Image (cartoon, rainbow, N blue to C red; front, side, top):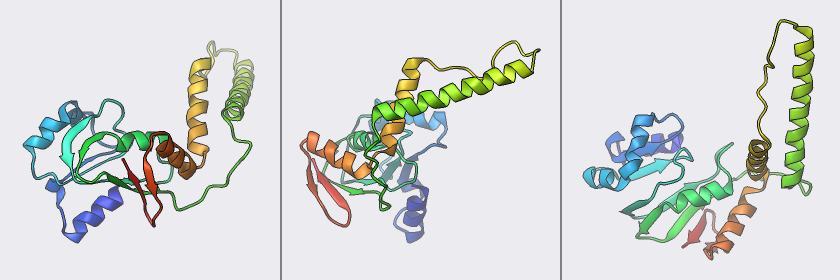
Length: 196
């Protein structure tokens, strides 16, 4: 996102006053804007471009009218398709209902053995290995009373495995499936367009 914003500023189309951005380094105080984002946007008409990453989580409901939505989903280690799909749905009033999406250009290898169950098993094996290493460490240090590793509950491990599973799947396949499930029309172009 930062490269995109720098490119916009260098082009002279907008300056810092015309861009509202939220990303991983955005301070909590600035994130408070989302408590009433519509009032903020109404009081700052100079904002012409709003950009955000998956740092903006649940509860963001943007009623202010926007011309168009773009989704850049080609970032390394970015959010999964489900999170991206939720991000584009935050805008309720669009003049143009075609959402332009840049899908990952680097194709991931399809792994037919990758399932939620296989990912959960991988997490359990990693946790078992960590416990064995922790036990070995405890036996070698008799003065250490408590373990150095805090164990997560089974529910937390399941959530972590599900998140990892989603991030390792093929983004474009998941995104197309989500569009189909929500009855969005898909136009394949050099940049994918999704019509709400």
